[in-house]
Length: 111
Image (cartoon, rainbow, N blue to C red; front, side, top):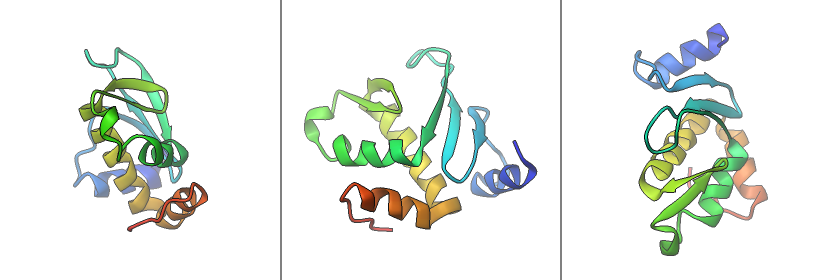
C-alpha cells in the first residue's frame, strides 16, 4: 500500500486498520475473505460494484437470503456489511467520484 493510502486508511479506521483490508485506493478496496462464509480469497471491490449492489439488491426484500457483491454471493448480512463499509470508504476518499458513479446508474445520492 502507498504511504498516503495507508495514512488515510488509518484515519478512516481510527488508527487500527483491520487485517482483512489488503489494499485500497480512491476507486477500489481489496478485502481478504478468509472465513467460513466466503472461503479464503481476496476480492477487489470497486465503486461500480457498490453502486450496482445498491441499485439491484440492497433495497429489494426478495434478496434477503442471498446477495452478491463483486462476484461474491452469500448471506445478505455479511455482503451488506461489506457494501456499507466500502461505500463509507469511497465517500471518505472520493465522494465526488462515488456520486458520479451512482448517478450514472440513475440513482440519486443521498450523501
